[in-house]
Amino acid sequence: MQLAQMAWMEIQALDRSTVVIAPFGAMEQHGPHLAMQTDSLIAGELARRVDDACGGRLLVLPAQWLGLSLHHMEFCGTLSASVDTYINMASEILGSIAQAGFRKIIALNAHGGNVSALDVALTKSRTRHPESRILHVTYWNLARQRLAELRESAAGGMGHACELETSLVLAVDPALVRMDKAKPDGRWAVPAYFAQDMLIGGAVSTARWFNEVSEEGAVGDPRTASAAKGEIFFAAIVQSLADLVVSFERGDVDTFRKVGC
Image 1 (cartoon, rainbow, N blue to C red):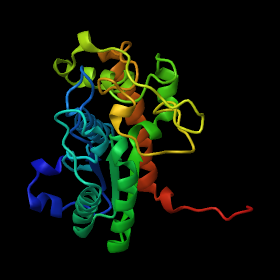
Image 2 (tube, rainbow, N blue to C red):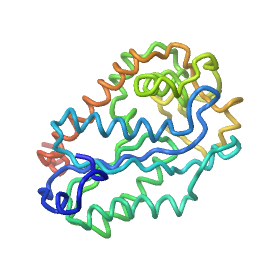
Image 3 (spheres, rainbow, N blue to C red):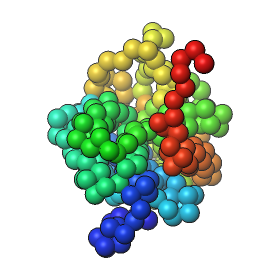
């Protein structure tokens, strides 16, 4: 169910245990071959597909296109909120649907720059709406194992405008991809305590501007991307999200086991 296409009375009639999907993306550069809307496009498409996979029983909010993209500002055309504005915006979007009485909300994130700010937004929302349970999930983290089994690029090949994102966009709208300009770009920090890939995380992080790690705005290797692979990636991610929805509906998120048992 797409909230943007519904009348308010139809939303009012919904069971308040309905799982709400709030997609978060960005409007930022994605190298020479992908469109600015890449993250928002992926976020919205994932939300639509997981709703379809769940029989249309989810309430899907419009994808939020404005992200926290300050680290991309050296590349022309990037639009970004400030840190404080983004946290307030995200917490107010989540808070708006919580105020309507919905108690199970998933913030579905498709942009790495949003991760830490969304965690703070969830804390703010929790204090304001303690009756609602809000989850934050970044799609490639949730589906990490499945994606790792499907990838073709070597370590370092998945990062930004990479094999993964390029394949996903090809599956949705190939007209937005300039494959003749797709090529390896970027660099990862050598010390192993930093991330080596979007699927190979590290224990230490630091704030970097994107032009420190990329020549033309990409990090990774998109040369093995294809629309067919994008559909396979989508299927793996959507299955992971659908599993999360079912677990959320069952109440597993607040099921605990005593230590030592």
